[in-house]
Length: 437
Image (cartoon, rainbow, N blue to C red; front, side):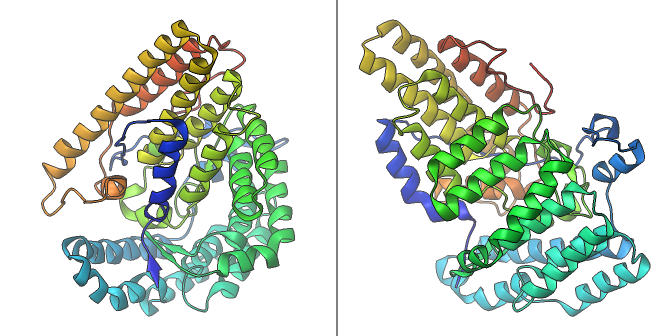
């Protein structure tokens, strides 16, 4: 059995969360990326100790042979062709497409396999070729061990590449994802139990090579919480990440391996589903962790800690499209602060925070209007889904950017911080290229 995107799995969690924070209104939020995206200068990369500019450029430039790039372009085309049929079908029709879905997303394609193997033959010393082939095989039936072997090979070819060590750590425990679909079952928990030690070793190697990258801490917090339910350990990792100056997202080759924002992924059109294979922030775990943090005794009565949760959510959103999930959770943080000051009887603070919530609602409307006008109005065959939580899935397919949204979210964070009387130097927020405010 196969499941849609993880957000659809935890609808009940979101609804329960609304009850927990007392009346947070329904929110709509999503976005996608543009076909013409800005690149990031290699000079902006955080240099590893003792490394040369040429060594660091490997993170910021597309890697992999021509055959590898062609394979992912073809795979993305296959996905898009299937999704057009899938979106147009009713529920009964979708059930009838399950066999084709599995063939396209979860079984190997002989032509693509040949392209990947040809890519390795073209340049057997390029570690990116092995990583890319491994990540293609990872969710395919019966290919997990082969996939791991290929990615491990890459780490032996480039031992000082933080990105490859992270991708191997992720491969040990990641959901078996292909495009927008997940293979169901308990295999992920089984793999985590089997590969925990290797996962920790590879993630620590990545951290050592890139010590200022908050992304590794956020990822580890979600993984620790998702598998072990350890809220205290996850919170310590989040605070550790919040204290770091940048959060560079690691993408699989042939995409540029390092990106500080979805908006910098300029290879998006041909490799959308390669990106989708990397579910670094599982939506259900992310939501449960945020809800439990905001309602925990250690955080719910401390405005500074509430804002630290909001910083985590906001900064994590840099590396994903600004979808309903992150916007919703920012709203929960605001609601929790309102609840705190209501309990204190501080009418002035409650009014200030209600003004922040009003601005939040305006951002919500802007997001919803952009979807209705730019996607539903201009994309033939795209319908408004019955499930509002599915909005962001359709948006990501459209290769459009909700340009005004990010600055609005940044303004929201600043308004929230000001209402809580927090010091900007102690609680900084960063723009979409991780530049200080």
